[in-house]
Image (cartoon, rainbow, N blue to C red):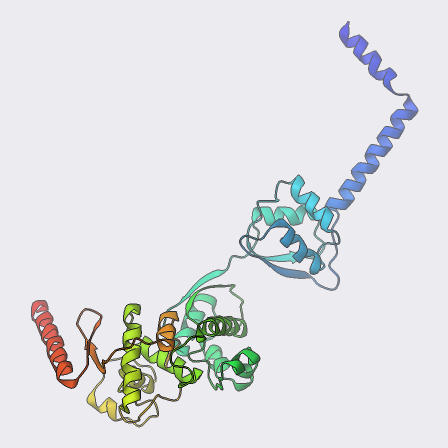
Length: 359
């Protein structure tokens, strides 16, 4: 009985003509909705567009990027589609290759499902040389290592890097050795050597500029000399807690008119082939041989890390002028040659004891 009344009531609810109008309006709205959110958006003149969504980017930031790249014609429609599909807080970071003729719905689904390329983690250790840097980039990003070294010594490319900033730092470079800040980076696999070197140099310029003010060695030493000193400090010790002490030793030697006699500069002169040095190695003719030539070598011998750079900018004040390995990875520092000889004797004794125990 109730069902019959319900059916009769439903039929009498609208006239056939009114029902037709409802159906037409509904169909029109459905068509408009489909056209708006499912119809492909054309990207003029491009088969695809690449965009990078960084971790932490908001929906509005993503939409602004899409709009500025001409991928979407309406910010509002993109936002509605994102909210309807529950993607406003579920966008996956990465680099996306947006194909031409993609709808708002498919675009949102692409971001929500993370159909993108993830960057490759690259660690560049403190003290890495240009050659070693080229090898790491070849292993991680398949970049030709020779292209990296060539570009890093290309004068036109060097002159194009942060010119005004480098001018403020009083740098005249013929190589980027020393001016590429080591650390942890993320790059995409098709990143060019140009992009990589620009990023590493920009990081260096930023860090060095921020810490240049208040340096205790300015203006006695220019920026190139400071970075050269930092690279020697880096080459001498992996222990960051020693860097300022080592810096003080070398600045003391320069102040007293002594030769630096820094082993890492000899290693560099030997084309970076790190090995136990022989007495004959100390006799090689090279501007980087600090056993033969006074003062600092012409330029950096590696790319020093932040600790070594800070040490070169603000060395520890003391009276040490000698140091030798202590057998534990650190060094023993001495104020005079007599103390130094005792430290050397102690080091040799430790080495002999270690060899005896091993045998």
